[in-house]
Length: 213
Image: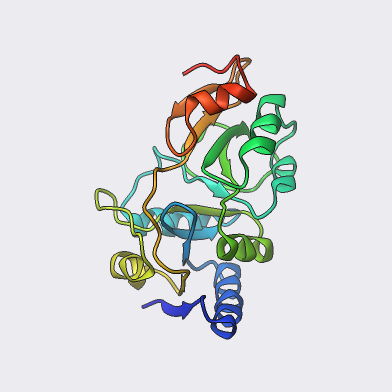
């Protein structure tokens, strides 16, 4: 069962971040808060760890796992060229509830599912998550729930669903369970909304009038 760390206490937060970073380096899973719900994370560059994440959630490869990053500048390292549309949207809405789909660099040694050369990337608006991501680098993160079950809005709920599969759980307090992130596909000539969530289409069009949905 995952070791639970109360990240509202500075000492426990520091210890929890150390333990979580070490677990990710070992190829293990970590439960962590994000700005929407709790997530289950793995080293994005460890196919075995990502496979363990999918197995823990009882989820197939048809829905590739998104990647969370700790700094907006990391996006440039994951793709051969950051599309202008992605750059403008990231500048306007990161950190926050916007996921950008881009073509990943072919040299990257990862397997996030049947993604056909693309990766969905987000910079979360959560200090605990970003502090961990700055230590680990990009993490494959999905909502901390078994497929078909409600997403976890507290560390206790995340542990109840996936604690037996994770090494560490970081408790950042309850989440509002707000809307999932909006997803925009930036791989084509015209950016396209794949899912409407935390960031509305009208706000996106203020930045990119050409956006389609």
